[in-house]
Length: 582
Image (cartoon, rainbow, N blue to C red; front, side):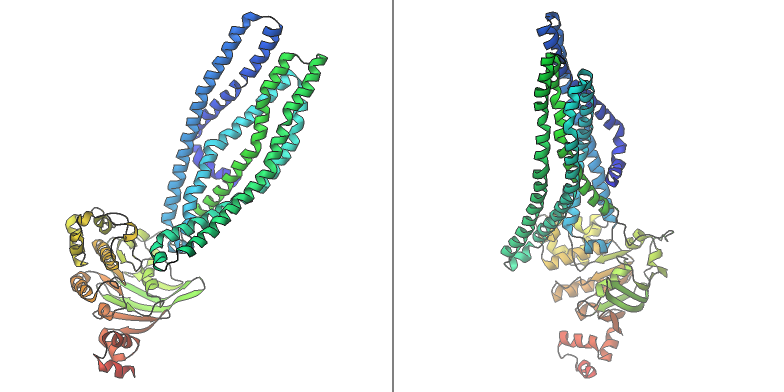
């Protein structure tokens, strides 16, 4: 029932035009009765009664009803298609808007294939229900009751004989409804898994080929594809069990009419014309009975898909504005962590982190892989909320700030670079689409991307492939860096931004960024000491804790983990470092 309440939220906007469509469907159903009823009159009054003068009028009535019915059926099909497409359009828009509101944790735990299934196969089931099933249910119910009224008015006893098939059809339909919905839910779930396998394989095709794992991926796909086939076959087995039975019981109606009606004609309690009318209207009785199984099938398919869409759309973001968020314009960029801890599920990622970054300072963050470096800076942007403690920007807890205003003041060049299938200029200007070309070229020069961009035949208008295919790793990093710089943020976060560029290019980028850093607070996550050695404060993370902090010189003097990294990268250039480490 909840699924029908849910879909009504979207249909009610078009309820008047849909009412027109249902009215037309009513007229079409009634016009379908004209030909069989008139045929009975022709037998009784023209053929048997000899009233030949009525023949032309009766034939004209059949022709007129057929013509009007054809036109109105076309109109009502257009109406329902129009409504269904608009309903699905609105739902798809809402799904996408909901998806954009969800936070990192949702995307961390939800497969892309699941999301794509909601927006494709499940929405198609909703469209089919709105365009076809709603009208079909209404049309067949109307047809059934209308023909019952006509048949009862002609001969009550023969109608009762025909109704003898209704109880077994009702029982079979009820059983089908109970069995088929779980089967459709299993189909939708498996379809999501199949989509996820395909999506991952397409995204990771270079890795697949690099490791020559094509056959492994084919086997993995074949397993999920086979399971999808099996889920569909399981549903087909349910149809094979109930639909032939429904068809068989409905098929008894002509037998009942011929036997019972024939006897009644011979006894004089039924005219030949009335028997012809019964036979002619038999389709209007058997049709809805036969369709009951198929319509239950469509309704349950809709219910299974609608439930999954509803669950998706009921997801609320964990990261959201409070009741009275603080709305600020340009931030100064002061950052403070006060006893911050963060758990990802049961895993403790950060433990009791405290430090202060004054506006305009540069903070370097180093540490082994998995030490929590990227998670730490993600808390500044409020991609996640800390489990304990506080993260403050300009003295205000980020949880109390208006989310979009906070993120407008922060620019991130992420470790996992994503470039859109667009021009290079479009990718750089993604955060500031109205930026003049001069500014785009300026930040590209700072990121040392301007020269290689101009080497392309189409320069900044060069279309790059999905996820930046067509550019090298270092080129993608420089385009991503330029995109972050163009935003002119109060807080700049560079997460391992130059790991794929050569030492010389990194030095040129660092020199170009020197002046840029002065006007904003900058966080630099890096594995190369050269990227952070000039920072005002360097934090060394290990296992989610700050194990060392200080300037480059102070950390070298301390002779700890940082000093060890320095020695491993620069060799024996600093013997004092080794002596301190001992």
